[in-house]
Length: 111
Image 1 (cartoon, rainbow, N blue to C red):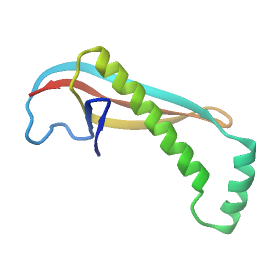
Image 2: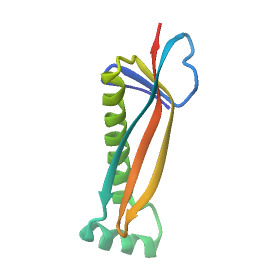
Image 3: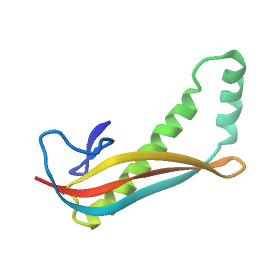
């Protein structure tokens, strides 16, 4: 994974080819908690019975991932970072019907 978000390079590797890490600024993170939607659950429940991709849940996960990344990038920007390396994702159930998507990595300055 490599993407540019608000001028910050976000990668899931420990280094960035062609760049040198000049300063490590610490762990940065961002998260979002999303609850299920009853209407979406009904339609996706039928899809689950018939088989195939649960498209609405895939879309919800992608929205959650982008929101968590955006919050992680804001944390990195507040520290003066130019990149985030070693980005990882974690999920956890918060309550019945709600889950957290957590993004974290190491904020760095590069040349």
